[in-house]
Amino acid sequence: MRYLTAGESHGKQLTTIIEGVPAQMTLLKEQINESLIRRQGGYGRGRRMKIEKDLVEITSGVRHGYTLGSPISLVISNDDFKHWTHIMGEEPVQDNADIKRQITKPRPGHADLNGALKYGHRDMRNILERSSARETAARVAAGSVAKVILNEVGIDVVSYVKQIYNVRALDHPNMTLEEKKRKSNESPVRTLDQESEQAMMSEIDQAKKDGDSIGGVVEVHVEGVPAGLGSHVHYDRKLDGRIAGSVMSINAFKGVEFGVGFDAANRRGSETHDEIDYDPEKGYLRKTNRLGGFEGGMTTGMPIIVKGVMKPIPTLYKPLNSIDIDTKEPFQASIERSDACAVPAASVVVEHIVAWEVANALLEQFTSDTIDQLKDEFQKYRERIRQF
Image (tube, rainbow, N blue to C red; front, side, top):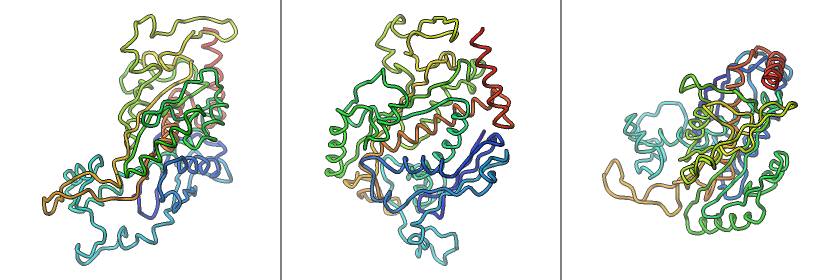
């Protein structure tokens, strides 16, 4: 599969075009909207989430509730565009001086200055509108289609928050995936640890009061993946590498780890690797999952456990210093609407990005012109490796 997104933060709409989805699979806009609504939630979100209610329209590739095998196009309209018509409209203007709300003061931590230098824009709104995290709504839409594919073959995905600022959630290793889903969806900060919940919310409140922002760590758990997805033979076919690259492509993410991740530097080999066992009914097993479900760029059959660290959002109501590119004079950076903390919402984005990469690897490996072909091939493969 592949997908392409288009659209600006305050533009008319976001558009996602997906190619390669198997035919004859049930796909309803309600399945996509559920994911979009989750992305807009979470404690610490700003006022914009109350203005825009992200809902999708499927404009091609689906007929009477079933995929056709042709490209699927998804549109998320911006209800607030009516207030931005003269700022973001496509019609020419007589004089650039007539363009409202031009940005000449780049915000530290954003793409503003680098993009302006690269593309030659004196009005950096031309950069920030596309580099905005608003684009992740279009990527969540794509990921929600991927999750439907995964569910068809018995693979499930959940995300949750492990840390906000200096508050770390306790681990709950015996919690089932369904329990993790329920608890993360019920929690305002999408954490599994109820004892940490209030402390996380208090840190968000304090950051907001201070005109500041805070980041954190999210985790995604993928269950039901068989051994052997991905490949060791080329760097660009290693599935953990693909997942890591995709997570790092999400706005504000600065690090990724699988399993014990960076803590492997503090361990010996005997404390890091996963011993292999065998069960006549289940096939090959791992006694632990310290490597997060991967060896050699391929899945081991254990759950995929991937974490991502999100930096604090750089748009601050207590703005950092910057330089006006027109006057070269120091100024405080301009302010766009922002969140004190978007970590809970970001966990939903990471969940869908990971789901996309896993589903894509699945479709690369198995015949998938139709969803029934995929399910049949996948089941045969499961049985083959069980008897290996």
